[in-house]
Image (cartoon, rainbow, N blue to C red; front, top):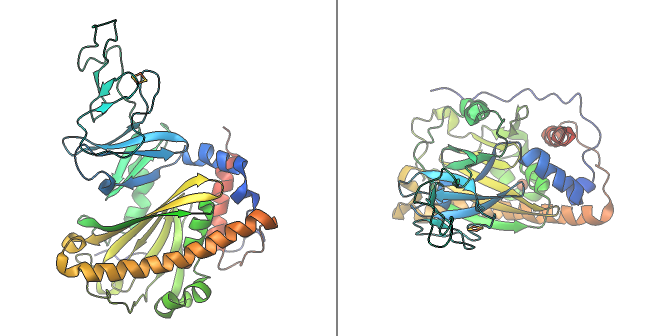
Length: 379
Ligand code: FES
Ligand SMILES: [Fe+2]
């Protein structure tokens, strides 16, 4: 069993005194540039396989202002297409749907197979002159979007020249190679609409400086001083703790990852996979928060908790799962209260970027540099 590497050496020598100013969190211009220069050019998590659990399930998703459709076809395969028709561009679906046999455009009834290929363009050549079924020589199918699946998470990249997903994710696979994620199943999910810029949700997640003040309960068994920094430049950054020992009703009652070395039983690592996936691994579950920007001062957190094997569904473990999830949500609610208050303050106070701690704010600094660099790229 490969041990997880210890903390990355995170130098603090080049820290600036200030972070991003309030306008980066409140301005429409910043927001628009982030969408166009960052989210349109990177691998972004859009959801989980559990969002479309059965054949014929489909769910619209917005990435960098592009309307996409996550679909599971009749063979169980998951696809991501553009969610607009090849005729006049009308959206195919506006809401999640189930039990679909075809994707039918509501405007002139062009029909596509679930895999995106054209099924029929009625009266395309004139009244009664239908485009023959499956003939895409003249009429194309829905445009496919580059997508990839990492365990139960689905990623897309709108940039056709971007690095292949396997190369992109390789450093994280290496870091967490001791964990066998092959039997993960989603045991819980929640969606929160949060009144703050998406960056505040990310920055707060990688900040363990606030543990004693905001999460007294959590800090009692995952103390600030036990944490170490993790950083893989440009890809992921966050924190870890080798002495995580929760005292809740779920502690030690869920099956751990198979074959996990004893020294990893008290380890947890929480990372932001840039730009907006917040993932935490424990000895018995993996948590993923997808932070979706919804406007300069709004985001949505889609929370997913995955357990090992049948632990996600076993009836005898229901109360244990509930205990694990409710403790997590309790801490997340404490975070949401703080970041919403921070956003309100940014809206009125004209915050200038403040004064960073050269030690505790080093990963926030790294994240902000990553954003700033992306925004400086030519259009
Ligand atoms: S826009 Fe879809 S069929 Fe015309
Ligand atoms: Fe927190």
